[in-house]
Length: 187
Ligand SMILES: C[S@@+](CC[C@H](N)C(=O)[O-])C[C@H]1O[C@@H](n2cnc3c(N)ncnc32)[C@H](O)[C@@H]1O
Image (cartoon, rainbow, N blue to C red; front, side, top):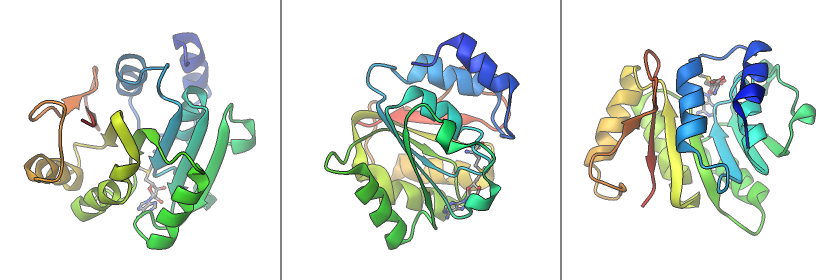
């Protein structure tokens, strides 16, 4: 569980991230249930600016980036068991590494998609990892103000294979302003 005080401490010692305070805190405090957010998968680490927040929430964290040289956060200091995987998130080798890292229980409670922001990239990440997300789990996307991500959201809403808790329920995290986090709960 990540309390506001700890969130603010982390935010103050901030590692470069494109996140907005209200958006990230809104997602953490109002969307992600601390009692059932045990395993998190992040696509797109960059400097580790969001990764270290997920490490406070989860028991198990797996994060993927095609270039880990950017990483500034120190995973050895993370509060939970963490596996960082370097590779293109949509390549089969990377997907296999994620599945392997999850061990016997191949279930993700929260998938954060913040890697390739093109529409095919964003949709591809969902296709690769959607099956891992448990029923009732959360899938969130950053940068919905970017046209590629926005287009991907539109396509997802239209696609027949994709189910929503309620029709058309992509919801902005409270406080969303510029870059935007959108999330939905898997049926
Ligand atoms: C916007 S940054 C992530 C920011 C981070 N989540 C945060 O908020 O602090 C996007 C990252 O995704 C990575 N990326 C882009 N395309 C990718 C792909 N196909 N597979 C894996 N990582 C990718 C980039 O290397 C970059 O580090």
